[in-house]
Image (cartoon, rainbow, N blue to C red; front, side, top):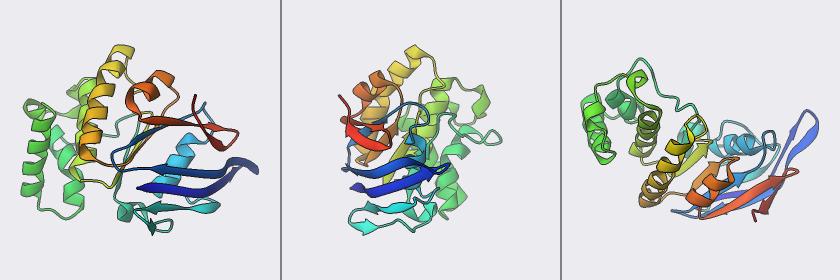
Length: 214
């Protein structure tokens, strides 16, 4: 379980996050709603360890991980721009995290090929990522995120760069694959329909505080 306890954060001397408390169970997808500037991405960065909150703590499975660096938290973070490496082909993009963890390159590439097979992307393994469609790039990004078996998945507006029809098509696929992986997932979005389609429940940031979404 991923848990946030009494998170506080100020920005430009004004309260941005106030007494934020949230629990996300294993296999649960929770959508975090709110307009631009409400603090959604800031909260996600705090969970990921990319930013330190002014007060409060982050817990995982009963352990306080507030002061752990991002690499020790073993969370996967997916951005709206996919953040794929343009100098690597699809297979090596997916293998990258395993290689960073110390797995020999040959084994990492073999596992990456297996993961691409799960996503129906085997035939794209040797392609450069700029030759892929937006939907293919997003599937590669999810494959790369899941292959390292992260303890939690953090999604920051993952579909906002895609056209409307493709967003709808990918929501169900992502939900199915994330739930099969059994990890707590926090989805940051401003799209109410996306929250309804993907998440088990939704919360909203209102003046820095979390409330249940209607």
